[in-house]
Image (cartoon, rainbow, N blue to C red):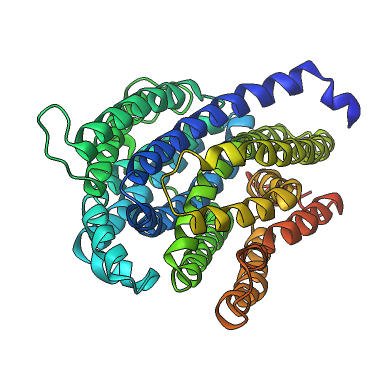
Length: 454
């Protein structure tokens, strides 16, 4: 395992995927940060409103993580097995499902933004702001759905350049139009929170045009063209249902659980909602390598299994476990060093900053195990094909452990923010330990391409 960490081929395959994905995620988070800082000049209410309204975006993100990583599990092994015909049919199926889900999200956000906001808070000030934001943001979902699913498919063959370039350009587009419409610059109306949604919509349309344009017009690895979108295959559909749907279901349930966390916090105070939003911005910056490493581990292990080298795939998994723990400790140190300065960027009440300090301390202390949980559950085990176990672990730890304990801590016992947030997120350290033990037991690796357990 230690020899593998020194293996240049392994390092190159990992870095070629991890760094562009991490950079793409960093850019995406940068947009959220600029939104948060710009809207922060208007006080806590717009920050809290965007945070709660984006709970629907969180649900979308995790659902597409399930769809994307589920299809990537199959696609990476098809690619490793050089089965391009099956890869193309899988891609067509993924695109069709993504479009349907994107339209459903769009209709929900545009037609019923009020009821959605009422789920998360009873503060009418936050609800009103959230409605103006969500009713525009809803139009981003179809474009985002197609761009996101296409990105996952391209990553499965090792192509990360086009999504990264599109994200870099989209970042500047988003920030520019946010500035224009939030503050009413260059003759535009001052839309405040609604202006942030307009900027996001313009950026998402751009990303869709670039990424999907590349996939359908230029990509040669998958070779999918518009005429192929209706391709069907019963055997691939069966495999997709067996391996992808458990992830789609578990990640959707995970997102719903995170939204329930928002409901719990939203019924405590506007201060804690705003504090959580601020904390999540910095936390996402620090943990960008979690997504990069989990994506890399899933693709690399999936390709290796597709090539038939199961022993090497097991060694690769153990190497990724060590890397994730190391990255987690680095993240812990960074959060503790940066968060005092980061809080000075926000024009919010001292009570909000005090709550944010408690939450910062909580997430920093658990960060190594959180990183381990993310990489094992979102990368290693998915690449290995152990999707049913992941679904069981995700749902059990969140819905049976974290949410009940968090609700009791926050709404019944009225514990301080540190302990409320600790119990709301206790699933992550537990999951890190459980998923690591599962992989090391040797029961995880499966040949998805021929449904053989090895």
